Amino acid sequence: MADEDRVFRYRANLDDEQSSAYLYRILVEVESDERLSRVYLRLAETEEKHLRFGEERLREAGEAVPE
Image (cartoon, rainbow, N blue to C red):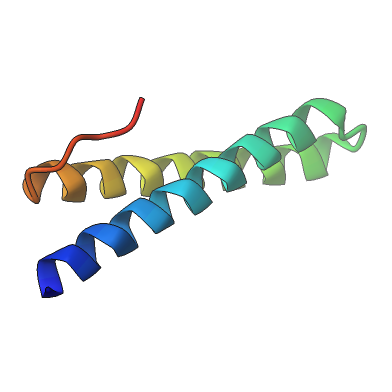
């Protein structure tokens, strides 16, 4: 049961990280303040790192990683 809970948590986190990264990438494109745009870019890159970390946790658990 603990493994199922962990995999569920990994998948939920992946969804959140992917959504956040996508949102920050959009904000990078529409933000006219260059300084703020760079902040959004760093946030997007951080979320993408989290996404890769979560994907690796799923692989280690023997689970398929969503495309």
